[in-house]
Amino acid sequence: MIRSRTSPALPETQQRSLSRAISENDDVTVFVDGTAVKLPAQARDAVVDLLHRLAAGDSVTVTSVAETLTTSQAAEAAGISHTYLRNLTDAGTIPVEYRGTHRRIRRDAIDAWLATQRKSDAGPA
Image (cartoon, rainbow, N blue to C red; front, side):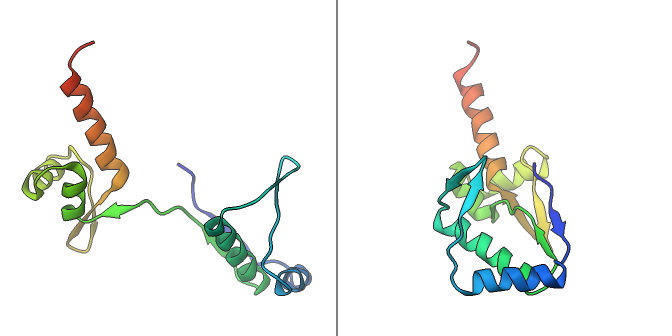
């Protein structure tokens, strides 16, 4: 898992330079190991947004957000009843996060549970 990272605001001279560079257009070229990489639209938009914030003098925190599901969505994704899913979360079989009193379940937790079910259904090799 990649940890969140906070970058401090840029010095004013670097803010001005970056602001000039991105004010003319939002075309961004990214180089990885010296090779130009064309970013998909969503990645490009995220990078441009980050650059605009740094140019404005903001500190920026970059973090990942895992897809979370309601219990109804998770039960549907797993092909099980809502009640059975709640029993699995109560037993700790499927990890759950709470947003206030509402349960949220990570999509990757459902995928992992489904994988273990497929393995146990397959039996010993």
